Length: 490
Ligand SMILES: *Cc1c(COP(=O)(O)O)cnc(C)c1O
Image 1 (spheres, protein in one colour):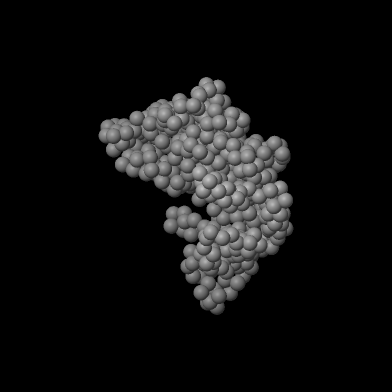
Image 2 (cartoon, rainbow, N blue to C red; image 1 turned 135 degrees about the horizontal axis):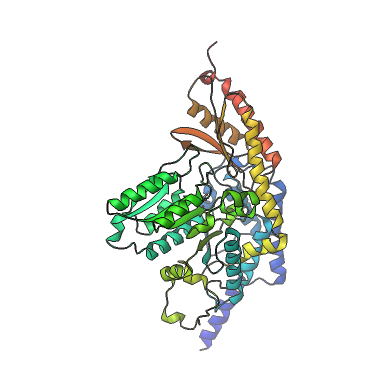
């Protein structure tokens, strides 16, 4: 017995090192804050993409052991191996893919959520956390014109949000067993690949996937959708799901949401909209006009870590039919018997694959409370205008082939060299621009043609960022057209 108590005492002394006292907390915190402040102070000078690195491999030279490493050395490792290589998504110059955010107040929400560690999975454990998440879901439901008694969940991102939608749709439409092979899903070839992934994970890979024809602006052609659905029905197949985009990743195209809703209604299809990129433009008057019909979908995905400028780790799914969402995700177990049901609030665990999860409400709620909505609206309107400004500028350049006026905030374009391969030229042009470090652009392939994209969505992106992009592009074109490969023989 004495031995036991002595041993416990010994272990306690060691285990208690995990609970630094107020003085020790301050010492650690000050250093961490100093690190992040230094990052924010230098943010303009850190290259948006740093090609000069060894891939963070130095982390492997510092193995996890029983002994601690000094905080200074630890932060040095983070600086060198994590925050220096490759893409800096916190940069104003991140104009590639669909940029993310990183507003500071959200990081403090995470900090609070982590220190208090509320259990946000079930109402019984933390009613406040669950009410916060649910009121945020109702706020977003109202924003997009959904009824406020819809289902919803704060997810880790758009991919999981899409998965939850597809799984709910599958179960509601009874797409199981033999039905799967007769089932038909309709989507654009420009739908995000995470939707294809969700279809596979949901066990629906044996459904027919029909790619609907796109118009000249890469939007679904409703007539083609209608014809395909009718032909499939006539052939004895079971059309059950149509997926549209409220802003595609490739070109920012918005499918004709209202028109697709008519077809979905007429043929009793589950109508899913992926608005991971575009749905938060519903905060703007322009967006509400553009996204008309979004409210007629059965399920919708939106990404606060894109359109609401939050740091990575926040997606949202809304499903009109709450019961269907619960049907697919609500489970019980003996060891959960104390978690009394409350009818008035839905527990996040009952509408998602997760039980224990990060308390994501706080990272979203705190910034909305601290800033109010206006700067978010204005930031989104600003991004729309920045994309137009960029396009107006390059439209005036010779030999620029420029995509249409952006529906939201993505512009695509390419330079046509006098001679030589245009695809090769534009690949080199991107590399030139990105190597300059001020901005980062990405590309896509449209009908076999390599095009450069500029996506304005990072909250730090302002006019001076677009001017940096214009400058780097002009320099790149000047440099490359001087190379023999691309200059016409004289
Ligand atoms: C980013 C994106 C996704 C994927 O969302 P994640 O948050 O990256 O998981 C899905 N669809 C569209 C249109 C996107 O832009």
